[in-house]
Image 1 (spheres, rainbow, N blue to C red):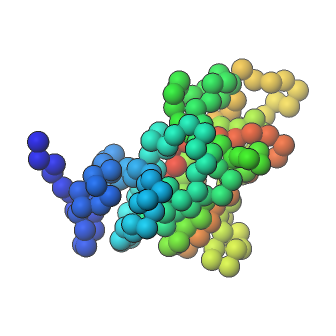
Image 2: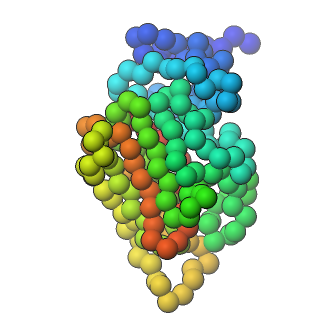
Length: 191
């Protein structure tokens, strides 16, 4: 069966990239798969505006996540891929997400090329903040979970919220929570 290619930019076609490990989620959003270590040197040309969704479900459980999306200029700090079995996280069985680890409560995403928007679904045991930083490391935007936390009791399902930050030149985002755990899912980036 012949694969039909859609133009990704003025320079390349989707089926030319990374041996067909991408697919269109919608006409505006491209799902990108992680690379294996031997493929880390492959680069993808990015033309703005492009919106990608990282295929976290293709990561291996307990895999340390750092350079798997480096072809897109995206690297992670303090992130591990997990399939949480704790029902308090309120996710589907066998769903792969990112968790801040080995240090609990935070994870960072760095961008080699500036992005305009970052969004993700965050589930956390405490109030979580998503901060965006420019190339000089100055915070340029911030948002936090809107759902209230009842500190006197442990909920059966932890609060979950879609967080997003938008700014002209984001080079890093940090998800962090105070004295708690967090997971990140449905991570999307707009160049």
